[in-house]
Image (cartoon, rainbow, N blue to C red; front, side, top):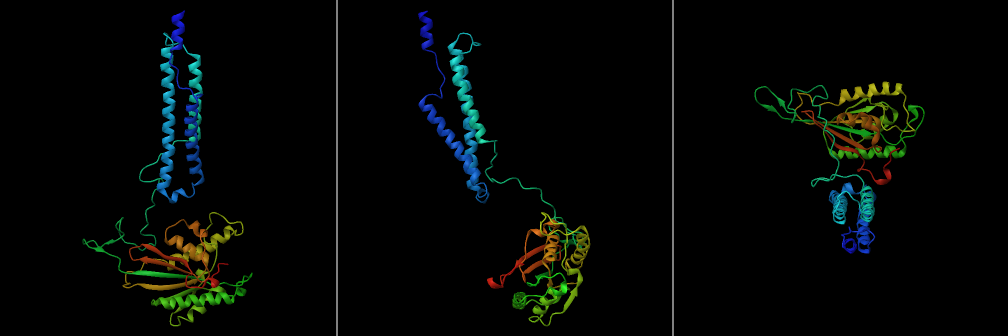
Length: 358
């Protein structure tokens, strides 16, 4: 009997979470875990701009998960070790030790739940994996030749490569501010709208490019805008085009509650504006030997759709950006089929009090 009591006193007990020093250790670990999680949640909108800070926080979170897992494993080892010492029979269970282990393991599991699912962080990046790249269609305008899939340069068949020699510069101008009316004939430019296009005409003259032609929409506000530009470029030939009239070029995504074109609008306007794109937007002709500069004075929807089509972007994305009145959008088309957007809706040539959108 005396020997049995002595053995009970000398039994090893596993670490208990009820002891003061253990409680403070576990509380500190919990505070670190919660702080890491809250910081990541609070700054998740800003952290992608700072990959290093994001990586540090995510690695802290990952380290806490590893530490919590280690504690859980340690608790299991202590439980097994204590049971073996406390009884000569391995299958016997010490109720007191089991109670301590249970409370400790439950706390660790709670900590793991607070940390959330495991996040994999790599040293070189903390951003999600990029989607697959869509190859550029070198023959997007139907005027391409057999080309290299990587460079777009033409093979002449004799071992020589034809390099791009010239480019087409397409400069799109949005009309000026105008008075809205149900009938197009009543949609005249406001005094501000005329000032805007006069400033744009001055800017085009300052660029001093050898403009070959001005194509303009036949809608009233575009015609009057062209008149203001021609005051500064009187020697440039101007040609009207019904294809450049405003319309709904393509079903928009996301939709707008205040702009709801019908299927008929999309069909009629879309076909017309698409025909304008195919007619006016293409690589230089084979006979062209120097850069050319053409001006198009038309409307926001037409310009935005042409930009999306030229850059091989989803056509429904045309609704996702805006253009100021009298702004300049500049597309460059190389002879090998490459397309570059030099500027989009640039109104920097106007004073702030002259800029408007609607």
